[in-house]
Amino acid sequence: MILLRLPENNVIYRLLANPESNECYGAQLIDSNEQFYTITASHTVLATGGCGSIYEYTSNSSHALGDGVVLAHQVGAVVSDLEFIQFHPTLLYLNDETYGLISEAVRGEGAILVNQNGKPIMDSIHPLKDLAPRHIVAQTIYNNKLIGNDVYLSVANINQFQTRFPSISKLCTEYGIDIESGLIPISPGAHFMIGGVVTNIKGETNINRLYCIGEVANTGLHGANRLASNSLLEGLVMGQELANHLNNQPLIDEEITLSTIEKNQVPELPPLYKLKNSMMENVGIIREFEQLKKQHDWLNLLLNSSNLVEVNIETFNRFVAYKMANLITTAALIRTESLGCHHMVGSNIALKHTHLERGEYVEQI
Ligand SMILES: Cc1cc2nc3c(=O)[nH]c(=O)nc-3n(C[C@H](O)[C@H](O)[C@H](O)COP(=O)(O)OP(=O)(O)OC[C@H]3O[C@@H](n4cnc5c(N)ncnc54)[C@H](O)[C@@H]3O)c2cc1C
Image 1 (tube, rainbow, N blue to C red):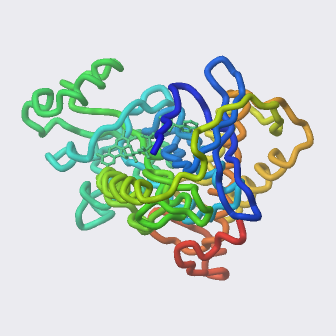
Image 2: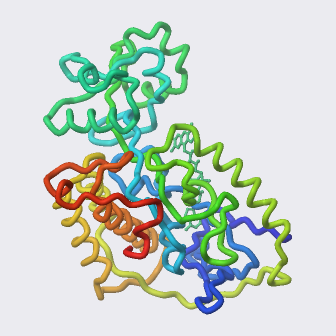
Image 3: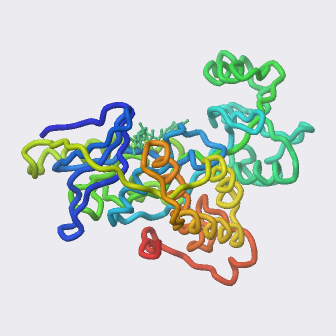
């Protein structure tokens, strides 16, 4: 088996697939000098991670735009459960931006969420108060912010906070937060993409020779509301299963072949910050039919525009982000019930309550 890991900063912008044989046979890429090339391969494994960075507030790196889902979907791979975006309740929040994550272990040690007047916000919400499930805490913080409150994590009652949480203390110091004050300003942000490309536990998709692993894969393990820390476990198990599987597969091409190619085009799209803001507002922690519909119409209009630009890394990233946002918004519109971390409010729910099993709606996307 010849294993080719992509060089750093090379971006896959298209998968090569033969619709007749339903097979993937490689990918087209852009290298760090914006040169384009093709790689053919016996087996193609996508491990492109999640999509948190299509939201204004996120714990994810700026690369997490949903590439794998968009690329696989374009060649006919089944995607599902994309409406289930998990929002982490406590990201460090300063000047309308989020930085890094304040672990739930801090609340586990006794920190509580308070508003600007020092009033605890979780007391009347859930029997577990600050240790309520992630989505409940994120929704409560979001609702507080909607009515103009600031929300803080009060760590005043944790003895020797700086010794016990050195990384979080360092992060706070880096951004000028005085830990001695006992208050860390926080906001919820997109954290984990629960859905993705539908795979079995070996990472096999419905396209032969195309595999997905890690956050891009939807194995079903996380249901509609992932439990923290299950993803690394999932990645380890799947990694082993996939390696075992591939080691027993025949090589289709004797060698990996490389060749240069012509560029193609994508729609011209607005800057990413417009998408991020609108996703946070319209397809975020609490969702409502009219807002989803507004976002869906806006995205469709943009993605179907006849104004085209040449593909490069920047235009491709933008295209992926808008396309991923469109897939999530469509999925959120189709699932009119609240389930897991997909939380719907408003009158349309009663009228159009639908329950969809995993993967059931995919044909409609
Ligand atoms: C702050 C934070 C804390 C977390 N803590 C935990 C935890 O405690 N326990 C737990 O189980 N999970 C945790 N998670 C979730 C878990 O870490 C992620 O789900 C997991 O790391 C994802 O791994 P991955 O290999 O699928 O993707 P990633 O590690 O995100 O890697 C994806 C890679 O693909 C590259 N890529 C993307 N698109 C393209 C493209 N088109 N072409 C080429 N390359 C591309 C990216 O640049 C990146 O290098 C945490 C996540 C975050 C953000």
